[in-house]
Image 1 (cartoon, chains in turn yellow, cyan, brown, blue):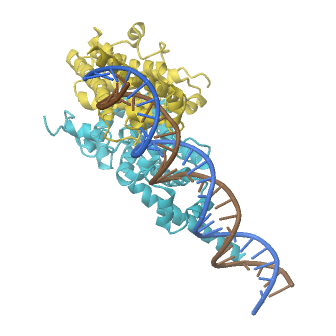
Image 2 (cartoon, helix red, strand yellow):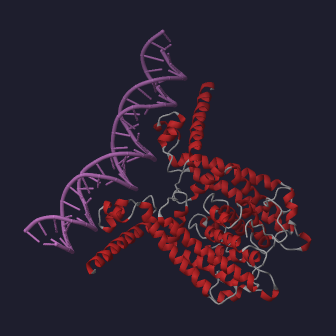
Image 3 (cartoon, chains in turn yellow, brown, purple, red):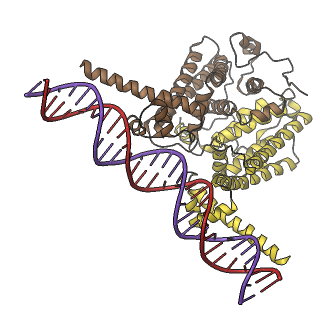
Length: 241
Length: 241
DNA sequence: TTATCATATAACTAACAGTCATAATATTAA
DNA sequence: TTAATATTATGACTGTTAGTTATATGATAA
């Protein structure tokens, strides 16, 4: 069985080599600007060989997207394990998304591109990606439920709907590299401010508002909150004015 | 000058015919699934003729997107003219976006597709589209400012940032036709509930909370609020449970 | 040494965006 | 009316790319 094993290993390795090569190219250029020929050249194989390992270009792309989703999922799971009130877990998940966007901008770009209607084929990866993202949202929902139970999150919201709203907001706000970055900067805000201020904006929508459970944003800065830097009392930090 | 005038008119008309034909196709099929040949066949012209009127496929697509943006812009301007408190204008704009998504799902789909990184070329339409969307956001910002001034919106938020957050949320929530529709429905919610409940969720983040200015959501239902149907007191309307 | 099988490839097809030389048609000038 | 000119339309083309196929290579097993 040793030989068959080795061949299997070699096959997996080849596949990984192809993914790695494709990733290098997709990280630096757009989907349309990377041809299968380019990838073949990068991995030093014939184009047709790639088709022995991947059904098509979409599947190869999706495989890389899946890598990216797995990393995000792990970040979310870590948030859930923290021993903090529910609302803090929600905040941590917001921060996790932000950190992810900083650490893996290319994965995030690919994830969002894959989300566009251009891809919605029935390749097995798509289901896997959906499941990965779904897990993140479920973890967020669980965190919200915890917050409702421990009194830090208002009890009249639905955990599922709220997890959707927050997920969509996170995604929208942290999707667009260059899309609205220019608009934000032209108004005298930094991208960090834009992201961090969002949490201050959304907090009243989530928080139970109970004095006894009230959480000071500054508390969270200490353990790495969504807020990158403590806010001034009046909550404004415009650079120009 | 009559002849030159007529020729100009005829040229404009041809252009419109091409746009109309392309629109019919792009409404029913995706960008990639509509070829320039298809459009040529639809408008009964040679493919090369289309290139006399439009630089390329992207520009033709962008022209249709621009049509869609104009309609949205008009909706937003109407909201701004209403004689209601600032927070109500914000709500009306949320509702305008929802109504738009119901009335023109195909335009909305095209708008969002055009927003993906696939297009970011320097064709003049792109700038025009950006300006159109920008106008909507500016109107929303103005409504927020009005709300701060009249005391219905909390004064510690920045109108610009808040307009960005709300715009991104509206877009995210109303973008995805089928993307999360299945998820929502599998949880026993209707798409309408999903959209309307969002406003109830977000209100505490915007509202000044001043008792004297407090606005009852039911007040808005009467003049066509974002909320499609009055919510039950506990704010839950799950169909299954 | 030879048969078998998986892996790799060169050469191919089909589809599409965009171009160009040429043709058809309308306008102007004689 | 007719010839010259400008405008609009077209068939046939190029170049590129995703994906396929028939064939070759090389390792393993008999």
